[in-house]
Amino acid sequence: MAKPKVATASLAGCFGCHMSVLDIDERILKLVELVEFNKSPINDIKKFTARCAVGLVEGGCCNEENVRVLQDFRRNCDVLISVGECAIMGGVPAMRNTLPLRECLEEAYLKGPTVHNPAGRIPADADIPLLLDRVYACSEVVRMDYHLPGCPPSADTIWEALVALLTGKPLKLSYELVKYD
Ligand code: SF4
Image 1 (cartoon, rainbow, N blue to C red):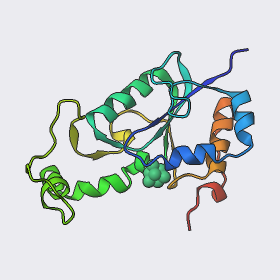
Image 2 (cartoon, protein in one colour; image 1 turned 180 degrees about the vertical axis):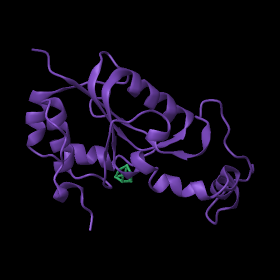
Image 3 (cartoon, rainbow, N blue to C red; image 1 turned 90 degrees about the horizontal axis):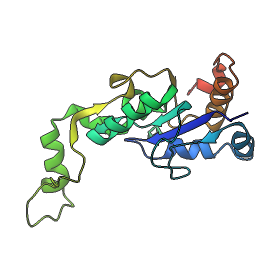
Image 4 (cartoon, rainbow, N blue to C red; image 1 turned 180 degrees about the horizontal axis):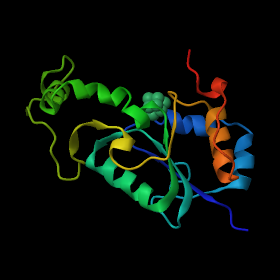
């Protein structure tokens, strides 16, 4: 029988949530028996080649490319999961949401104490994805089916969620897996 397919993406994140996926240690061998990875930075497959049962999304949307990737995941995945605080609420990148975008760019490229920019230009090449006015949580852009909290969610949390979804069981995570105090 064909294995269910899983895709993963890192949008405006730090790859810490992907590290947590790999942190499931020897269970990664069981995971490979259970699923086949499709589009993902883990295997460097860049385009969907089949419909996926589950899509794991790290990071929120800070630019137009993030939005395109997230919409692509929504189209190609039956179940879409926000993995970690950046995907759920914008996380650290969303700290810029308290300032106008112009001010952020000026601080980063013109006025910051470590900036050396004799040309005094803010990068605006057509190849650079356009920044959005603010950082958006994934659920503000497309419908997300589940949210796994944490920064990052623990390997156990990701493992329990994936196994439940892929074996058709209800996704009921214990308090220990989702508490952060
Ligand atoms: S939730 Fe934490 S670990 Fe995950 S991408 Fe954001 S900052 Fe990195």
